[in-house]
Length: 469
Image (tube, rainbow, N blue to C red):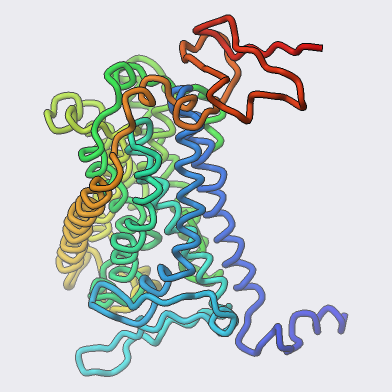
């Protein structure tokens, strides 16, 4: 028994006095689950929900975003989002790779909040785990944001342009929102509520993705008119209680409310599909789940399941702008519209006791409660307008700069053929897809363990392999 107790209480070089092993375990577990949402959750989702000829390209865009974001994050991105203040909406960039930095106690330096009299109202955020845990946890949010953005431009954006876009958007757009709302920027100290990312993770890629789709240009007419998912069942495979940095009472409330929100929203979306189209749609169920605390949770979920549905299924088809901009997976509707709605409804429904648990500013409450509730709605509205405006401007400038060197849209040949032309690979060896494959163009397929490969006699069929024994 003494040995078991010592395993949890002994202070060593690897277990400093401030380290709480349970909280560190909780944070790493939460980070792992968010990471799994990206790798492999969204990678599988994108590869499955798109037309077969774009499965590899769509999966690779998500895979590349995960890879590039991590490198940029530890080199400079983390400190730009959670470091020392440079501007009211931006922090100073610096590496977060040094071992002396990673093993010290986690801290968000600009999170100390002062009241009107200059006294400390809320102390600096100092979780009971090392900086390494916090750096990785926040990375998983950064990478999933970029991957969500990718859904707006699947099957249309030049992969080389995407490779240049990811690090630039991370550094010049995502870090601004993250610092402003989470890292100690002006919206954080004003008391704007953005628990786990209504604005940072969902509204920003929804707006940026729509903007990117405008500048990149649409898919081929045939792809826009018919874009069936290549694997509906696997698509079904593809929020977080770790945001309070501790396994405290906020965490289970967040987990429970998130599941209530997602399931209610999904139910509302599929019900509307049945009422208006007469069929239950698996794709609709997935879209409804993405749009989405208590009675307030259910009310918010009902609105978030219905208003984005109207936006996507009704307004989209009648709007000239929506028809001109080809948002491949409708990220504008499922994330921007839904999470803008969520952020504004929070300004109305935020319960005072729960606000005291998570906000650095005291006396915060929704407009439906007594006191200065209307002020909270105003805060949510102003923050949303800032996030929208910043993402439109920053995304536009980034893409226009990239366009000088790299075409944003794929060449017509690649748009026609898909993965085979872009990557020299296909997701499945299916018969009669209509894609034309010339194995002589891909040297690594010219031989198979020293055996010759002959071109397929089937011009529009599957790849043909003849083994000369």
